[in-house]
Length: 464
Image (cartoon, rainbow, N blue to C red; front, side, top):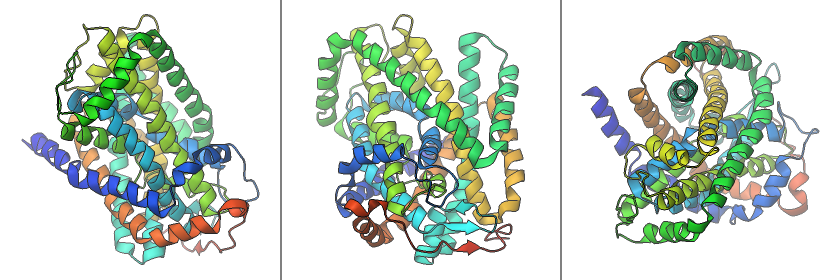
């Protein structure tokens, strides 16, 4: 009964009110920033340009890949499968649109994270929605709520369910003992997070581009194999997004409202634009001014949703069309994804398995840092070691237990996380617009002369 109740609450939280709040913010910030999406290719160039003269703990590229390590996760595969299963092919178009407009919100939340960041006594940069709420709006109480939600839900959505995905996929496809995989995974995660943000960013810089490129190329090969049905695939996606007619051809018949709901919900969940997670690492980047890092950070939504989620959707829908034996009617996103990829000879299953394993592993690393930063805000730097120990323990637990209930609880907390972050973005929209204009054109490389305040007694935290 409790599990059923949690599932119903999850459906309410990720229902129309939150979807409208998030997507409405995407559109509003697109207008307030002067359609910042037009600068996406400039932002991609900046993401691989080092800014060594600026203050920060890690490079802009390191901050981006660490953020991508958490957003490029199982949602890019299973989440897309769920959207198609529940909302029909048209959900893919609405999912893609959340990425296109979500770029502006990701830009906005990262800009205020850098602008209101602080420095600990040991020189570490700390920032995020809690500091924007605290320093920018004098709403410390709301910052505390955000940090509590982030530090707790990280154990579910970023830890246990991801660890479970890694172990499940390895054991099912390679016939290895679950306990052995769990022990190895726990040990590797422990070694990486032991070195803190610099260790995490080094692994992310090496792993994220490789795993994303491998998955992209694998999907591209599959789409070449399915080239004869691609025109039909694109036509079906567009027509299903705006038509209440049954899609047919192995797909569930879905209304426009269902396509919108599941496309928006899974897209927003995948790219995390508006949730305030990515700014927790973006605030640590070496950057001349807030706009530069905000531009770099917004490319994460482009890669996550506009590119990778779209590729996943095209692969699944084209495979279901081309191979009539595939069941596209399952309500289980993992089943839809597995069926669609498995019919492709030789490369289908390896692409799927490699994507799921590496995406889930990288998410564990990225979300650890998110949870740690939120915990530091609350309890100070003395809490880092206990948090690391708890994180490693929960990786082991998550690897070996059933997690449907944990997933739904984490999903709910993740949705709640977005509310205080969106409040910060909307109430500070004038600041965001002003900073965007201030560093436009040739001024993009100007050094921000505003002093970054030092937090004394950082080991105590807000609640210490």
